[in-house]
Length: 635
Image (cartoon, rainbow, N blue to C red; front, side):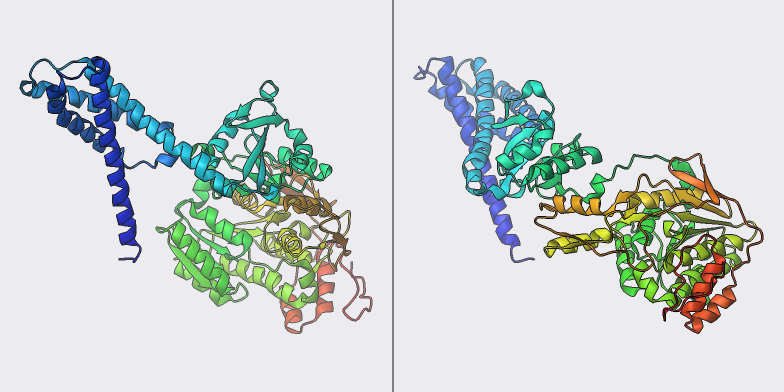
């Protein structure tokens, strides 16, 4: 038994004793005052009736209170829900009181006054509610005042409709240290301007947040629905920045959280950069994904990576027969296996520490699953500037690995293979993009009959291992500067869950030898992303945190593309998913994968670059070799 358990039990016993004593005291007082009110406190001739009836009234109401567990509520958090227990308990007690007096009527020297039943009920009702409200008031207004913040760092504005703000204000009184001291409410309800909610005034509109935050020395803005959409949050962030107010932004995710009770730090989260992405909601026919994934044997390569692990999480919700986690990193494999085993205890999770470049590892994984129905190929080297320095390794992993996986899956007759590609495969300027483009060819040009091979292209995902967001956050935490390539660098962005959901659906609707393109919205300027992230962190860009332009690194480009001139896309029946219709060049020479293997073994960087140039039309790869000598143009 833990050492602290006896103390907890003792405190609970003492608390219940106090509560029962409170109930007994209230019952007695209500009973005596009921007789007093009935007979104008002329009780000399009624004491015998009063004392004989006292045990009956105490027993009746205590039985009802115990049955309805009125001793279990925490009075500090007394709410309307508690009323729903108190009312029936009191009326049940009154009914038992009437019944007990009727049963034991012979003990009374005369008729028991019937009005005493009603008066006792009404007086006891006041006692029970009054006691609870008094405890709650004392906790919030006396004890709570001791924990209220004394400096402006804890001052908070609420942006939200009056009803939602009332939920927060009522509950935040007992959580001031966690939420902050509320100094005002902002909303678009002009007819309520100047009125107060729980002693806090409605002082303005959301578009005044910056001006009011600065004037009131506010450092936190709490955003409630419906003001938590990307456009509205962006407006609030920009408004505070323009006014010179350094405010942290926080949101309560849903009205359900407001109604759930006490507002605490777990129900409020910081605004993240993902909240500023103007991504529209989309819905798919889940029946297609059910037929693709439910009760199927599925393998995910790169299962421990940011994309691969999210594929695993979403696939697991479809109750596959087996989910094979194929990962070269032991650390990443350990974490995703443990997470899935905890979240889906009935799922058959098979963890394979393997390398997609080794045929025996892939065959062993397929054998352990007793065959596979679907493979999601997410394993790849993705960091552009690192791959410029490690050309043979990039070709080895991205091209040879994909080739081996495609060959083995064909030999093992795996019906579906879906490869995660990249927008950097379009008119590639980097080694990473070139290897992804060649891997697409490897997958699609050697597709066997009766087996579906699909590649899915999309842009950057926020929060992934290769995203700029984690880097920016570390730079902000260390005081800056935040490093951006150029003022005009733009990227397509989406969140990891959204990207994976689209990948799953694209794999389900894609037909053999197709490249699926995800609708990425409008490209975002990286410098704008950096500025917004600095503002969300409570700093002023270029004042508190500097932004430094460092120029494009090798292989990088300012604008990403999803298509080239010889490609166009055709909309599928599903929103945000397009299929690439390519003007195929039948004279194009197939990729010589044996030659790739030979060059990788020889660590021939220049030879691999030449091969990439020969294999990819309209490329923008650098034609300079490692020693600075110009490579012959093979295009």
